[in-house]
Structures are given as C-alpha cells and as structure tokens.
Image (tube, rainbow, N blue to C red):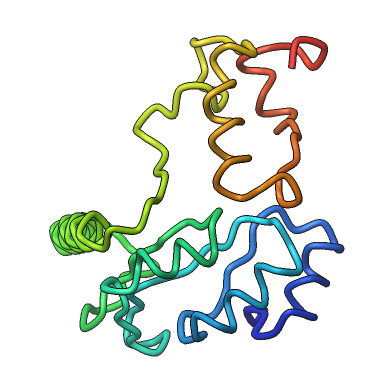
Length: 176
C-alpha cells in the first residue's frame, strides 16, 4: 500500500477506519499541514529513512514537522544501513548496532527540538494517564493530558475516545 500523498487520500484512510496514518517522508511542511487539516489521526512520519525508502534525512526539521503534524509519531529508519529483514541469529550484532544508532539519532533530534524554541509536548516514558497497565484509569490521572491536548490542538481538533479492548487492561468501559 502506498502512503497517502494528498489530503483526499489521507481523509479516505481516516474514513475507512485508519487509526494512524503513515505519510511519505518527502512531503513538504505545507503538504503535511494540508493533510492535518482534514483529519485528527496521528501521523507516523519517518524523519530518516533507509536508502530503499528514499534515503530521506530530516531530523533537523523534527520540531517544525511536529508543530504542524501533531499528533505525530516521529520515526527513524537508518540511512546508509543494510536492510535486515527477514532477520536471523546471524544478524543479531548488526541489528543491535543499527538499533543503537537509531536511538542516537533520536537523541540528536530531541536536542534539535529543544533548541528550536518551539513549544511542543512529548509523551514521557510510561505516559501516565494514557492507559498504562497496573496504574489504573481515573479522570485525575488523565486531566492534565486532556487539557494539554486541547490547549495545543484546540477544541475543534480534540475528541475523547477509548482504545478498547486494549484499555480494559486499565479499567472497565464504564469507568473510562
């Protein structure tokens, strides 16, 4: 399946029941803004892609991309690395080295984001209030997350939905 490259195809994936949409990595910030205008679904966007996916490198633009596309999952492939799929025991060391480099590149992108001066909100590890198993669900735990999302995206782009059946690890449908 090809990634949507225009607002119409993005909206169609939303209407067909998509819960997140992978966009092409080479879209301009303006094109991404046009897609964001037609759907609130999270956008998965590689800011670095393997050569087989075009070899795009735009980690330095992460803050601007997030500001326009949020909610967005910033993803890292690794340019100039060999493809490992299907993987096997003979590639464990190489896979681990590639994974470490992806983490390093993500850390560099976080530094660029911090230096950008753009006010962004990032989910922290464990993401309190987002349905973490063993934590339980309550309005108090979710209040800050919900209010921050409304402040950042505006009421027109905010909605509440559960993630059932996954959320049942934290609470019943009636509780949520």
